[in-house]
Length: 194
Image 1 (tube, one colour):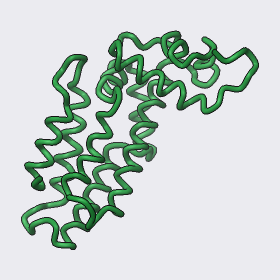
Image 2 (cartoon, rainbow, N blue to C red; image 1 turned 180 degrees about the horizontal axis):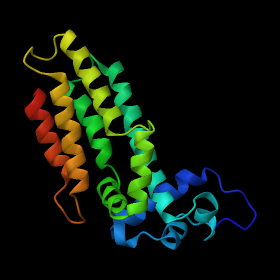
Image 3 (cartoon, rainbow, N blue to C red; image 1 turned 180 degrees about the vertical axis):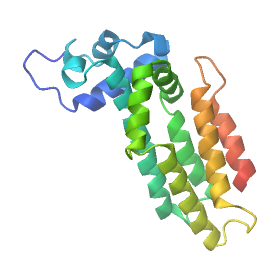
Image 4 (cartoon, rainbow, N blue to C red; image 1 turned 135 degrees about the vertical axis):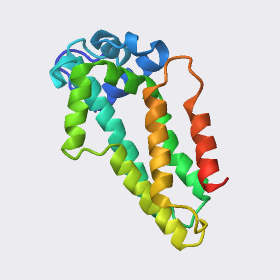
């Protein structure tokens, strides 16, 4: 536990990682300010010192994780011509399901103030599913130009199917539900081959 008055390094990420562990272990209902700060081994008021409340905290956590996935999707353009197309797509799509992604998405959608904050941020240009879809489309177009995809593959449609399915799986997952990564792996294989 950090002593009072001593700066806690990388507070946001420390609290975000703690929240993911709490949700992964106990589901969305286990997420409280106290559970997060206890898991992060920091003072009880630290979360509220950096966020207006739990709704803002959850919104910022989700937006941070969207931004990370969008950055990984943008990096796909550098992967064109390397590895397999399916492996490259798996690497991006499966990031959404790492840690407590499905549970956090469900939590965010069950909290009206959180859902509103996320929707507003996305409308203002925060990276989300649209940014991920655009990056996947660009990557697939590059692979098509390299001849690593058949002419019948439509990059826009494949990107929409991957991102739309990821969104669906995130929004409809619950604790103890089947692992959504298996469905995503099957979808990518069906769309672009193994």
